[in-house]
Length: 154
Image (cartoon, rainbow, N blue to C red; front, side, top):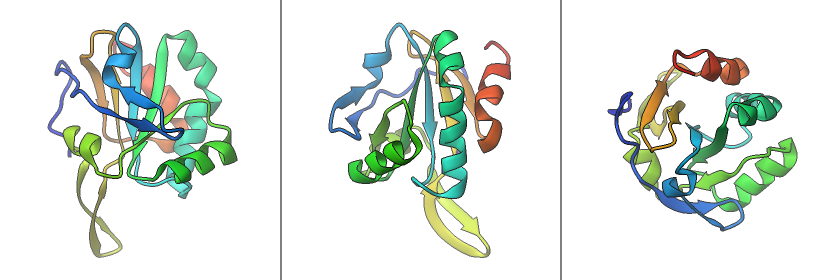
């Protein structure tokens, strides 16, 4: 699980989105950012989470939030995921796991007795100055936007 906590400076990152456009934490300076890490495009839980954020996108924008999803998937997989589910926010390509590891959301997982390395579903709410306001480790995929907005301080 992540070593980061509320009040920490968010680790800087630079990568590319599904279209090959550069994306950095500094691009969101002066804005609130929902930076959510998820295991894999087009899997049931990840699809449910992304669609919940999509369905609440306008409300989240009204509250001043930008959204950026991060997984180890390729740009092509991200693009297919965005197109299939009409996602209105970018997805960061992190095939080398640099951003995922910087945020401490990579580690050993256990599913049905099988151990493997993977992404821990985690969301960071980052304020306008790059400081982590909230860390959500128990993500409710079907109700994630509500969970973000109900967190104290939101």
